[in-house]
Length: 113
Length: 112
Image 1 (cartoon, rainbow over the protein chains, first blue to last red):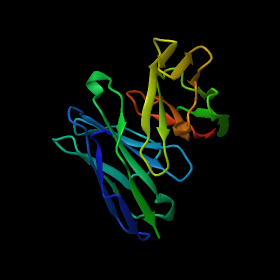
Image 2 (cartoon, helix red, strand yellow):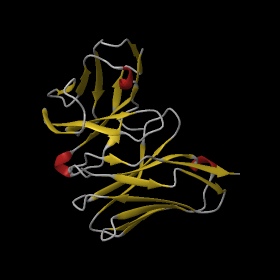
Image 3 (cartoon, rainbow over the protein chains, first blue to last red):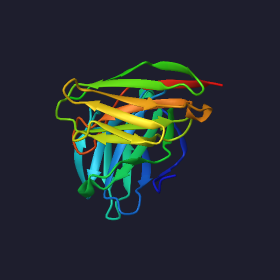
Image 4 (cartoon, rainbow over the protein chains, first blue to last red):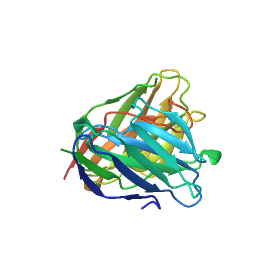
């Protein structure tokens, strides 16, 4: 198993609410990427944080936002939740300076009712 | 942006036989191609990756080949075992710096 952890494991919210998901990166890693994986599909890139700055964004609206902290852990925030936001949210950590491989955390399963 | 197509979507193979999964990508600037294995309810796990400066890489029963001219890459699993049953995803870093675009996945079933 990797050293990447995520919390919470599962979360149930209702439409319109806001949610914060957390990711602790592996020791020695300075980059966190977030992905959304809908049921039966491949992960889709949301955005990447490198040394506390957003470093690229996929095709997701601004209500998806994030942060990276000095210890390189990261948060994903989603405002105004919609039913289609129900998915497995995965973070992956790596060291961009070394062009390292990404390692995924176990994910947070978000259900929006 | 990058587009990754993956085939087949399902694959059933007799135990001990080989399995091949193929992916094509659209962005000629992509230069990193990992393969992930995902078991039900688990995280994607990297099983092998290849960078564009090599054409083939092998790790025990698993190999990946890359054809940059044709923009396709393939996963080869030999001597398949029941524990190889899972969903396999290919990916390409079309965004650069390992911001990955994933294929749609292949559900591999090994028949004992």
